[in-house]
Image (cartoon, rainbow, N blue to C red):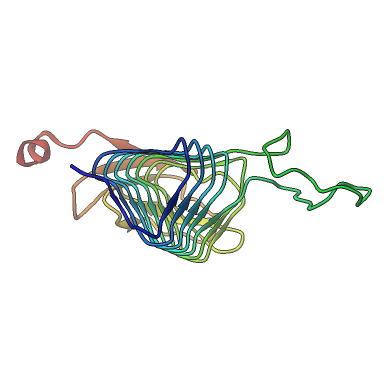
Length: 214
C-alpha cells in the first residue's frame, strides 16, 4: 500500500504517516505528529504538532486538531470539528506587556478519543476529557466533560440521551441526563448484547451462533 499526499498539502519535518493513508488538498500537518495506517485526512484540515492518530481513522474536511490530542483506532471525526487544549486561554500575560507562548505548558490539557468513537459535524471538543469507546457525539455538540463508552451525547453542553451499539445503531433513548436504572439490549442489526444500569453500559460476548456466522 502506498501513501497518497496531495501536492498542496504541507507536511512538516518529523511527521510519520502509515501505509495506505491519504492526505488531501491544503492539509497542514505540523512536526512530530504520528498518523497510523489507512487514515484519511480531508481537505483543509489542520493537525498541530505532537498529535497521535491511530489506524483506520477518518478525518473529514475543515477539522482542527490541536496539540495534546490523541485519537485511537477507527475513530470518525466529521467535518468542521474543533478540538481545544486550554480551559483559560489568553493571548498575552496579565500585564499585557508580553505575548503568551503557544508552546504547551502547565495549562495545556489533553484530550483522548477512544477507539471506534464518532464525532459529529461541527462539534467542539473541550480538553482534559475522554470521548469513550464507540461513543457518538451528535452534530454541533459542545463536549465539556468525559463521554463514557457507548454513550450518545448531543447539545451545548453535550448531555447523554441514549446508548449506541458498536455498529452505530442507537438504543435505549432517554430524557437528557436521566439514565435508565436497568438496560439489557440486543442489537437487531449485529446481534451484540449490552447490559448496564444507572449510566454504566458494557458490551457482552456475542452469542456463539452469531460468532460462527461472522
